[in-house]
Image: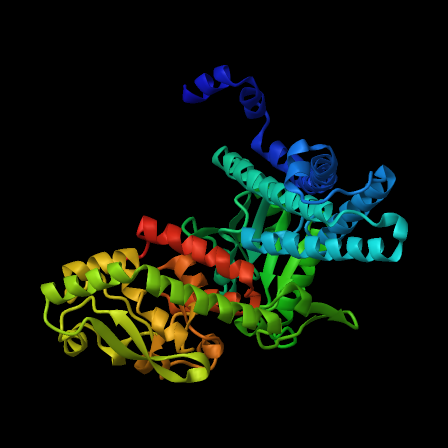
Length: 510
């Protein structure tokens, strides 16, 4: 009934609802990438045209500028606009932005990085072209305005596409339906990681590598087991599968010829159905960037290396940290004094809580926080947590009885972390980074878990905005390693903004 009312109000929605979800998904899958590519081209060229009009035909802009320029040559600006458009779209295409493939699925933060970096390089191409050919000498104000307008429009387009995808998802329209080959732990990790990348992509279930005793209740990771590789053609047809994903997980194919035969049969079936088959190597379960994946003599190669960042990023990050710490401590001084007084009035003990935490490269430092618990909280911890019986070196206590009333407010708002601004000034911490962990927990880390200690710890971090309060150490470390591999000023600003939203919503409060 509600759908009928909606259809009567909006004819376009009514018309769309008559198209089967599978057909609509197929159309989206075929034309989404070309549409985005054409839209990007039009938006960049349109931004350059608007920048030209604003720079040379807007009285307001002319009044703001203290100088006048000669009458421009429209042909030069048209050529520069064409170079900017072609270079920007080509560089985004080179990064796989316009592919209908599992490899092109990205989080919004990744798309932001690709669009911005491609734009910066395109701007460099334009400036070099203008320098080499005197006929193409143009206004730098035009370049800045065109670049800024284009960047805003491209990001707006991606936000709009994301909203459209979520709207279509609510109407059960999908353009990618994957199945996972094999029931293994890496398959479960793929299932968890792909969940939030694209709302129009869905993993429908698992396919066994070898025949198994059929059961109506066969499930794995919360999804049904659709069958085995001998039934692959039927499964693809019934489930409308558009791609298969296989986590290799270091299988010994020579020792298990049946497994090798099943994989060859699966690849042949995918080729016959003209459907992609994605093989994801285990790769020691570390974060890998796109430019670290390649091919050598026909073999896929992944170059594993430490998270390297541009040297200027380290300088910029430190300057931002120190500046914000000084301003935050000075501007908020009356508030911090009020919090200190409230802590003192409610319970006995010091205002600040000092604890040894593990920082960069395993170095131990003294981390500061506003005290949120009763004075003897440390002695009570052994009654609440048995460190020796922990399944993994991490714990969270829900509704911790040691937390005071003012402490709950401070934790809810994140204000208990404010004294860590002093840790930033001392060089022990940063605004953004993996959270510093307790010494007794880090002592139980294995080599893979210790990889999160490669950066200066932060007051907030990627893990805090993605899964604040999540007790799973594996997911925490996954987010930390992702940040270490992709860290940049833009990602740091994105995390700070997301932190504000997470604090407002009160996610993960313990």
